[in-house]
Length: 423
Figure 1: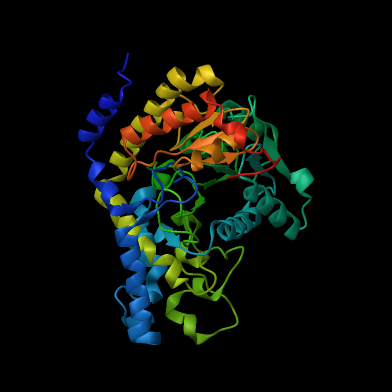
Figure 2: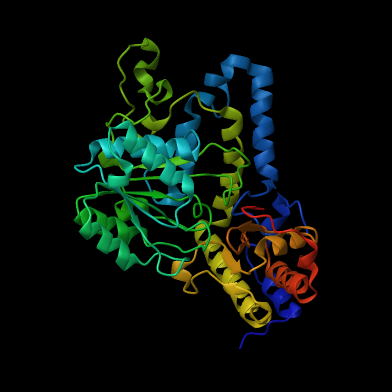
């Protein structure tokens, strides 16, 4: 059995090849375990924002073409740097809009292209994905109650891949739209398997990678995925409101986006100001309005940190940290009423661990007051995300100690539990 001692945790930190990266972040708490909601600022991300502000100050409108990098090509330039994280060609990736806007735009496109208007989602999705599917179906004259198909969970935590395959076989589906990682339990889906089965049933396959980009390597091109969306404020650490990312398979280039806008027009004729829209022959077609320079700038720094660390090494450490957290939870927290709600197989686990407790919201509040930032999602999930770039094994050890203390000593009882609250 592993040695669950503080000294063992320190030994593992000394042997960690990524330990040095923690010095590049300003972590706003003793133990910041909430990178699955908002990653902290890195030194180079802050410098990148300051550089953009200085360009604005010194160059004004000339920065669109003369800045380094020039603002005109921000979306494409950042797409090029993002492509290795998602396993795509540079022109298949672009930075644009927010995640939900990209969901609307891409769903609108693929519902229009599909042979059937049916869209397959799952019961445990992040709600915005369902809102967008319903809206895009209604916009095209389809009844969501008829054409939105939902895979139900057997246990309230996870979705069985076999049930997805069954739903594709039993329903008339034109688009499968699934997350890579479930936002509550942290279950990691097999993107390649879901894509293959969707295609076998004549459906397009799209994915919401919000809870995996930056902590789980993807191979979207090899998997055959048709489209994907994600954010950059979680594990990529590009800051609140950071511009989102999207992937569009090369085979899908040329279609008019569901939400076309001038910034997605082919750049060569963009300023001809024609009334007809000619989409860029790349993922850049899904840019809508003028790029948000100050919200995109941090990505230049944030991505450099991940590339320096190496996404495969980030994933390796993430698996080790979450496994260590689960082992400690089994030993020290289970006797106090905690349960692990995350798959134990690393191949089925993203970057965070869901610890279930009947007083989860109170536990979360008590932890924050004691220097441990986690978050709570109803009905009973405390999400703990030991992000590999700034979290060590001793951090996980200490977080579990405080999780144990707030329940063992009854400290959580000092806090109210209002219904529907998140932290």
